[in-house]
Length: 603
Image (cartoon, rainbow, N blue to C red; front, side, top):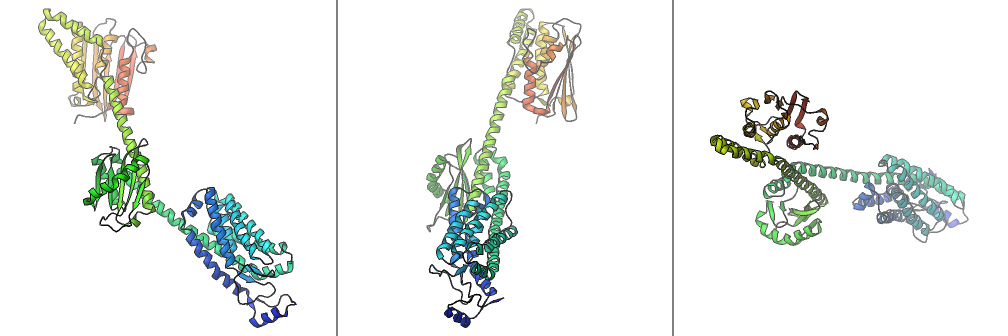
């Protein structure tokens, strides 16, 4: 479509000038705008390299960040103003001129100002859209022209609309470039059609938008769309890089977990350092405790003494502050390692050592490598803390087991000594035999405090020693029956699992005399389980006591149930849920206690 004289002016000079220079098409205008819009797109690409921009996409901006983004996108708008094309709505002519602050009141500018403003609103929210709109619109107002007031108002409104859309949509999901194109075209269309309504000369406004409206909408819309594609392509690359770094950190953490759980020592650190050296870009890796280097692997081990001298102050600083330290040397020295990152290792928020990663070139210690070191620091600290917690738990558990195993009734010891004393004159040989049995019982009781599991044959020694001493006190009163397969004699159980049950049967089960007071021990295998049954034909356990026995201490003159509770606790500590303990008793008929544990043999 060709435009000639659209309004007959009284100024014959302008009319004759237009006839000499020639007519201008809308395509000419669009071509010029596209060429100038490419400058904005180039600047947009440079903006994507800023960390602040990435923060704006991924998380809520602070006020400081918003101010910076307002200035950046406002600058976009100012550049769009300065690269705009001066338009005289009554005479559209060549050549196209850049605007200046002396522009006549009857001229306008076809510009790409809205690229920065709408992008600011869509990516930064209402505050950034409003702020960048005021800056870009205010600058356009100062350039003059007959639509400067309208463009100021519409620029601010466009930024606010874009920011409002960001608040409504972007908190749910990232706005896609195709949606950004549609949104920007709609905002630009609204701005264009409102221009004639907001200026004094409606006719000149109509003429202006007929010629510049379509190019402005198309060029600005495409510019915004291209900028969004650039932004998102950079973000996708960063997402991919972060995913790779995260995967690498988790892979290394998985590889090092079995070692750091054993603590921070030379053996574990050597394996961890080799894993880091293999799977990271570091040219050398060292791990230290609070005082010295535990291990150093890499190509430059011969420089260990130099590294220790240079890094000692840095290491002390890291241990004191608990912060990561990085150093990049630009001095050309003979030392091959030019960059280092030192990260503290913590256990319960207290530093216990450091991780050092060295590089032969300063540029190799880039941001992803620093983030990887920081992630590994946290993962390794967690592993060390978990390992220490496991060791503390194991020590506490062993101490508790040993304390329970060390319990012995003093009255049994006194009674046995009294019986032996009484037999010394009457039957010295038998007294000697009983003394040997007592020493066996006491020796087993003492040694049991240093062992978590013992063979069944060792446990049966304690049972027989106890039973022999009781028979000496009450001759021919008790009968002990054993049914144990020879293949199970080496099977392992906690010390004093069977003996206290035999003692309970004799002391409490036979408190009333009956014929053939018998205790029977049956031990057999069932698949991968070891089953132990201790039976007696005593008076049984009353139903009222059965409800609480084994779960808590029972106040009673006839027995507190602490022996059974002791056994149950030790089985639970050693075997966990794999062990079971059950009691069946009938009054006047006897009691059966069944223990089931995993079958393990002595190695």
